[in-house]
Length: 366
Ligand code: NAD
Ligand code: IPM
Ligand code: MN
Image 1 (tube, helix red, strand yellow):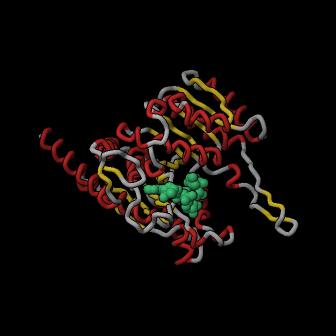
Image 2 (image 1 turned 120 degrees about the vertical axis):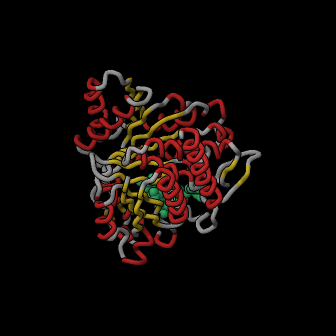
């Protein structure tokens, strides 16, 4: 299989973990006889520095022509005081909008050997396996640009959703639940927000089309509490953009670290974008200690969803499982009695596993 993959490393640890994903994908290409042509483009702070904008047109064009896009992370203190249109995060929001990536899938599954790495009790998080389906191109992130009035003392952000925007993400979530354990929690704030009332109406209307899915409505504040007190309650969670952002960082605690969560951002039929849930982690950038697994697992999601290369995706996920089971971990994971490694060594372990496992399977089947 021949594929064109656009890499958007971005800033901070985004660059470091992107190198890891590229190495792992190169190993997959070599072992399975695929050709992955990588093309690197600028986004975020790096693009501001080199092109004067967080999302150059050339980056958007390259993404549109790609078979899939991998993104590291954007942002950093260097650009924190920039005006809104010159913030790195604008680049990220811009590429999501330009590719109409409205469905952000964030799977959260605890690895067995990391149960004790979470500050939560093992018996609470054991068996948790959920999927957050986050609406990604609407809501308060994309309302009328914030304004400041009355000498900057009054600010306005607007939260807008159309029925169509809600319908398409709710459909995605019902379909995801059908392929999993058949349970959908729709998270909103319908006791206060008009947008949430419409959201709830749409979910109620849609549920007759998916009779095999059990639906419940959960208010976002209660959902935040249940997520860490009774996470096994959840299968699929569907929610609007901002709630999904917040709940997914919270849910990362179930896995032991934000550095473990991958994500897939999908549209109707075009190019998909895959990125870790975490940011550019300025506090550890440049130290070689970032956990590359969220990025590597995002590359696995790309192989599965964009290229239907399930064996290849499974092999990457098996590699991560086996390495963690052996006690290897990066410093963000509070693992007892394991061996702490840096970004490069963790990447090497994944690559070596892929090469050794695949070679032994070939020998066995020949
Ligand atoms: P962050 O996700 O970058 O970091 C939060 C904490 O988690 C930090 O202590 C960091 O060291 C740790 N962490 C995150 N990923 C890690 C990894 N792979 N390995 C080890 N530790 C990891 O969030 P923040 O500090 O609030 O934001 C920093 C910058 O990143 C901001 O500019 C923000 O806007 C941006 N950001 C970007 C994205 C994205 O590009 N998708 C996502 C979130 C935040
Ligand atoms: C994420 C990030 C982004 C978001 C920021 C950097 C704009 O937090 O991908 O989760 O809020 O969507
Ligand atoms: Mn976030």
